[in-house]
Length: 73
Image 1 (spheres, rainbow, N blue to C red):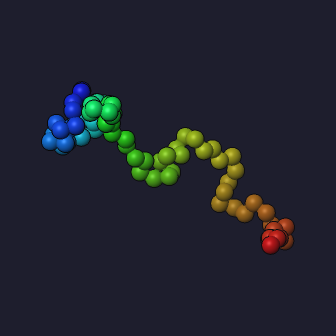
Image 2 (cartoon, helix red, strand yellow):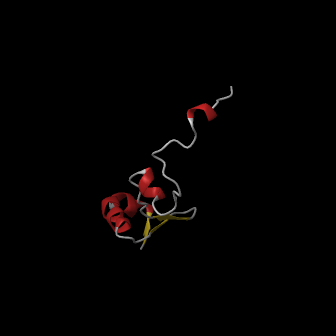
Image 3 (cartoon, rainbow, N blue to C red):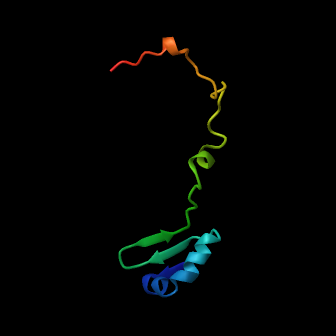
């Protein structure tokens, strides 16, 4: 959908609803054209990483015995 800046500001609520449905709104002015689209934010870091991080070990148990762990400062 193509509109100008004035109509975009007047009917912002309807254009926002169209963007949520997946449409791209093109706003034209004297200097150029702007695209208005919706971006869906991730709900959590776990949701953003789902399917991208793989654990090969059991992380509920210590990985080193206490005597092997020596921090250095």
